[in-house]
Amino acid sequence: MLKWPSISRQKRDDAKVAPASSGRGPAAEALELALLEGIKRGQRAEFDALYRLYHPRLWRFLSHLMRHGEAIEEALNDTMMVVWQRAEGFDGRSKLSTWIFGIAYRKALKALSRQDLPVDADEVEEASDPGPGPEQQLGLAQLRGRLRQAMAELSPEHRAVVELCYFHDMAYAEIADVVGCPAETVKTRMFYARRRLRLLLDDLAGQGQGEE
Amino acid sequence: MSVVIPMEHDEHAAVQALLPWYARGQLDEGEMQQVQQHLLSCQACRNELAAEQPMQTLLSVAGTPPQGGDVEAGLARMHALMQPARRPKAAAPRWMPWALGLQGAACALLLGLWLHDRQAEPAYEGLSAAGTAPVVADALVMFKPGTTEQAVRELLQAQGAGVVAGPTETGAWLLRVDARGLAELRTAPIVALAEPLQPGPAR
Image (cartoon, rainbow over the protein chains, first blue to last red):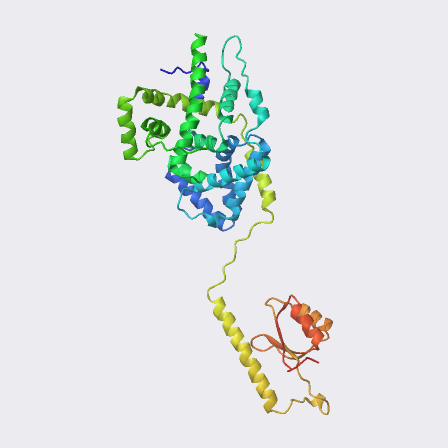
């Protein structure tokens, strides 16, 4: 049985925090749709409210696709500009979040193709050697580094599937809508991505056992 | 890594691909049963399922960016990009096409009547004009709604145009103006319509 490595109790408690999207029910979706109706009429207050709702979620999503803060914000604002200018383009056949995340995904991939930087090499280098101390205690920064390294070995398309599933709580059909590919492709990407993350988990678990 | 391989023939792989959504209860009934049946007989996949919670924990703890973006700063930059404020497209009232059509028909009728009367009757001569040439209009002009009297006056003065008659009930004016002036009137932003009344080239 896999054993979780020795991160502090506080960090484990933090981990119990529900994903950002898990608390979003029909009422939240109805609110978002009401805001979108205001945006269609050109009302800025409604746009501001939707922007504040989506900023944390899009920032987190985009930060797994592109790491530079400026690039993230540019892609985020490009996404929200589409929402502002083309709100009428949302046809209601999917959730509003699916539409917005789909725009963000395409904006991120476009930005990455312009930069020709699949991952940020400097940050990967920084993360490549977690350098466990004498106590073999994995600090949060080191843990982040290990995960970033593992994620960096995946393509942006694979990282998007992981992120949308594990943090944004999307079913695979919804993810397929966001990234614009068949559902089978989403499953395949998850299979490979999960296999890579599983190696990391095993590695971390081995370190955890080694501490005892 | 981006190659899609069919996993339906490898139940082991297919089930493992579904485990994240199985653990969240996000599969349909058929897929839930497929995974459950496989788990009953597969220790490896049960181990994979057991790894789901640590996987979620790892991604929740270590996958959160150390620094989130500044919402208000981002919004302020957004506002700068949004200048000027977008105005919703004003939908034309349903009666607008009919009103425009009627206005056009009224203009045509007025013009026809006026031309007919001008040919049928002797030219009007005011008392002060006795013994002088009749004043004949060269053009029919309509100004855009909301145009001020001052703007009309300035335009007519600039083009050497004079008012022969008007405004009519439809807001049309009959003007005395030469060809160059008429051409200028047609391009003036306050003019909605400027048509010559004289056959052939204007004077």
